[in-house]
Image 1 (spheres, rainbow, N blue to C red):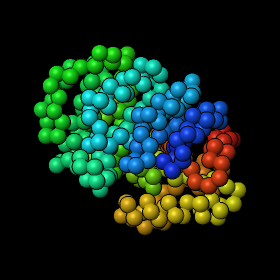
Image 2: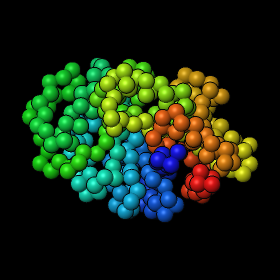
Image 3: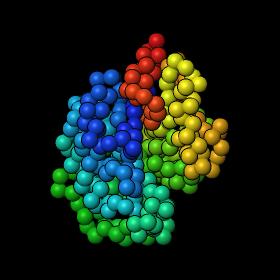
Amino acid sequence: MTNVRIGVMYDRDWDPAGLAGFARQAEETGLDDLWVVEDLGWNGGVSAAAIALGATTRLRVGIGIAPAPLRSPALLAMELATLERAFPGRLVAGIGHGASNWMAQVGVAPRSPLAMLDETVTAVRALLRGEKVKLDGREVRLDGVQLVHPPEVAPPVVAGVVQPRSLELAGRVADGTLLAEGHGPDAVRTAWELARKGGAGDGFGVIAYAAGAIDDDPARAAAALRDFLAGQASWLGRTPDELFSVSGTAAQAAARVDELVEAGAETVILRVFGPEPLRQMAALLAARKG
């Protein structure tokens, strides 16, 4: 249990003007990670990561996730390399399919979302390793692109995916899988099974997002999550009571985190609902230490 990384998401609905201060407080709280979100119309993931990294000295910052169709792999690799060189060892880059309706809304919906993700992750990782990339793929075309300032050590690139074929693809082309809120221990185990089927080797890891609310009154914690879980259940095609969450008292929440860890999650990131999210996270950390 001691090796798991515990982090917090900077919710997309929170004003980015508060990100730097929140990141500093998250670091002071003793959290390992802070993850930022890139959803259409909200905040830019790379710029948000830069703000959080610049405001802290130890905290690892994750981008979860950059939509592959919306990002040129060459430009994304340039941005990630810049961050990694400036803040070595503190970046994780998540790349995903992007919500299909959002990608259609901005005119970048790919013919093959699977090929788009495959080729984007493959190209970005190769560029970050300093390679000259020539790729004539179904969705991505690069003709001898190479970074002038690649990072000394490439940051992990993880795939934020849900469906079985994509989870298997993550094992073949990425450094890890990032699971969306609502996925519990069974989904973590399935992610590992499919990643191994895809060829995941040493160094691969599973990161789990989880909706969280920590309160001395478990009923109040459940109420704080109710609306989000209803919406997330609709997106995942499930019922709210089928979704996994980290809620209840600090001790109950710590036990829920441990369920994810026992299933194979190496990092657990809470999307916190209710007042004072970092106070809630501090209570969780204290309960786990206890």
